[in-house]
Length: 295
Image (cartoon, rainbow, N blue to C red):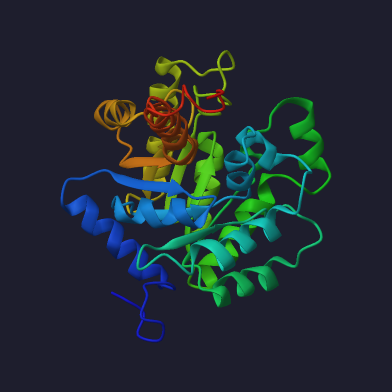
């Protein structure tokens, strides 16, 4: 239902976003959420029928030709980048698909309640925890947790978002993280199974196997359902890249859909631009061979 004040869909209330997703599920269809790093990506993701559009700071790096992991590094203010993409590129061109803002919840410089108010005021309909520390492991993860910049801050952000009537769709990498997010009031939980495989800047060797992907998804869905069966479970990353991959994961687990960024936005460019350019380059100009020759 378009917003009567703007003529466009955003912002939606939390319930309105949830109801839209339930309409997709009631049709027996998988939910497809897509990351957009540019306005033109968002415009055509919407035309393709995406259920949600998510703004990640990594979208800017990805569409500049760099790996999505750039979004986890200190190459820029993640929150400011996501806000800028949303304000100037995506929200002005999206007609009615709910637009979700990636939030770097562990940034110690932000008063999170204040930042979420800005996100809501800008016209976003929800939040996502990206950059997320759930995909950081080892000693560095322990350091982050011990110094107040750990996953707990992401959970606290989601609890605040729930109080502010913002829809939340969040990344987790373990059952424990999923339960924490479910208890905080997350509306949808995404099983993150690693950086997307393939393409020019996707991983080739640091890959989670299909067996592990399926097993992790099912473990996390089970943990979420012990808290609430109303929470929508989705999957992202790892070997899940193509529509066929998504069909495989929804057929073999209880996840209800897919969140793709590289899989939709980057791979669309990588596959279509070379083909289109080659078609242009195949054109022969009859006068070309005589150009510059002497009479």
